[in-house]
Length: 256
Image (spheres, rainbow, N blue to C red):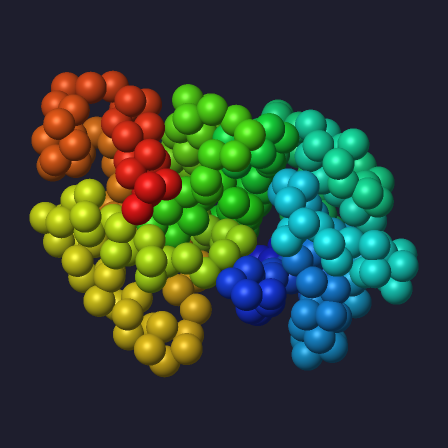
């Protein structure tokens, strides 16, 4: 089976929209629905016809386009069972351990609470693609609005176990600001230094910094690296458990 085709596009202020498409079946899914017009324009550009919306979590900048897109396409809307009451238009709900078949492409579902209580992510193992919503960002992670810091760390640790070559598509273009913060946490990380320079070049040209990969995040994202000796020393937490170090990094990002 041919790999899924992926089309990424900007929308709203700093969101990313993503379409995935199976060229044999003709099925096309929007990952979340940040903005109906932007999704419709992306469909027009690609020539694809919307058949599904795969929702990661309930926040308006990921769901506000659902009603209009469903009305115009009669698409199937799939989303987190833990937030079914907060997302209008869901046809099917998914939770931890479920798999979802999209045109023959199997997605494993992970519950990744922290940003919201019911947040889920979609891992297409054979296609080597993860749609992480607002749980994992390039060089960052989501702000903890509803869950706990312990939950967010558990969610990120779950994603850290995926293969290094997994491509990661997330909900926002935050990478440049995340890089600046990351360098305050682990300034001696040469891979991070190089990546920050590459990010500055991409943004200067108006180009996206996504997708990233699990391997790249493991080597540069401080939220993925609480075991780093440099990070622990810099935070005054040498020998502390990963969850405690992560929590301190998140607290510093929140007040930065």
